Length: 165
Image (cartoon, rainbow, N blue to C red; front, side):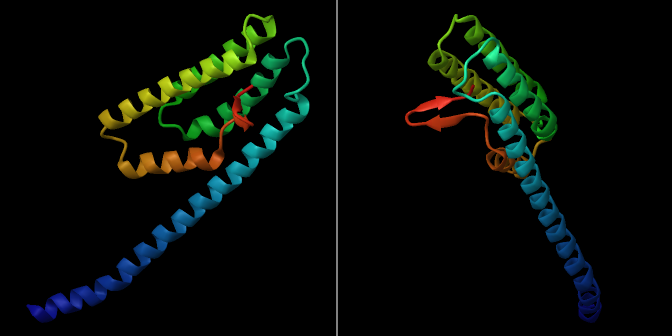
């Protein structure tokens, strides 16, 4: 019996090695894909910055800038999200706030604060769903968090202020 186990183990080692190698290759490809996607997101967001600079005002300036940024996120980042409806909520909130900014009903600081609050609310909902959904593993959740961190956000910190528009 001991000899059979030894033979089976020796026969299984190449299969195990091949499986580990394939897993490592798949992880490398995924990391390469995320890196390429990050470059694409950064390039397209820079295009939005060039078309609609933060420091230039004008009619519908915030709405045009947000339309550009939202399109980039919806096309490139939304497909990776396990809860795309939450991404849609955040993008819709940013669009609505941009319209209020353009209409002069809201200051940029207030819009940023309201968007930050909405983003926190959405993040809490995402955590709630993740905790109650058994179909999303801890590994997948960690991978999603890593991808979001790697891809960045459309907000940037300027001094002590955060600017999402």
